Length: 432
Image (cartoon, rainbow, N blue to C red; front, side, top):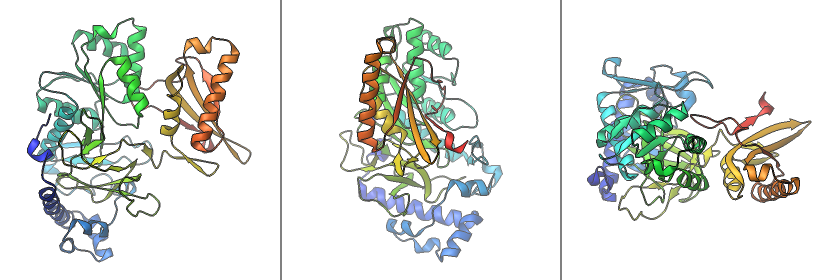
């Protein structure tokens, strides 16, 4: 299913011509109206007229989150405030908040792009979509809400939290599609079981999840517990919110909306492009944003561009699911470790629950890593020998995958905290 077939299946040559025209227009806009970019371009001896092909994109400067914070709140806006009809922002918990704005056209574009994602994930005007993201300054809930309304679906703005109430709404209102983080979907599945409500009592068919990395093993867990088809979608506030890319029902990568975004994947250390199919940091240039255009924004998200075409017929590039973030990476004894690597291994073992936490500590001059993982009651209350065997197997498998020794502790179900938003997977006590 397509929302905008003529745009999602655009001929490659026509798509690249459209991208170039929109890139040149965007560069002229930011040079004229955003002093930050004008100074950067002038310092590098570049003018918008110098960009005559898509290959020239590599000559332009990167934009980082630090740049956004230094220009807080409105320094990177390319239109006067009278044209801004919506403002979103990050929480600012790791520094000054990043603030983004939208014109009426931006809101219209955003709704259409999210409608593409929802349609690709199976949602139609006949569905009842329950939004379990928190409403507020974050972009997630509102972006998906407006996109679902654009499709013509019935929208339940449940917001996040009060999980038992979410389940009751899901059952009584006959929700057919749930939208949330994958970790919250697992919490809802556990709550469903605790409430004694069988999955057959629900009308759920689809789940559209994003806002945090998750593995294929977690996808299977969610699908099995909720009886749905689960798809991944991607976005970030700095370049739009949800709607940058999303999986179709083939689930062979996330289709990037290339008529609105130019994407690159670079080595996060050298900032040079990686070979096609290799993992690196995603860099995005917006092509149609009016209020808040971004040039070569370093997302910090790790992914890769996938070769070949998808059976669904969409012609745009596809990206692999985000495996982690460069700022989530742990360096343990000189080895790079990502939570997603550990999650993938834990799901290999029957008897472990899909809830874990990685605790990093320093004893003397040495880093120590403990993976705390919830075990099923059948394991936790069984004889110690069986617990010990499972711990040893997990430790051996982690050592093989990561190249370092990791301690593993089994804990009872519901010992580790649950999140109604993004899951907190890492506790790094070295920084405390």
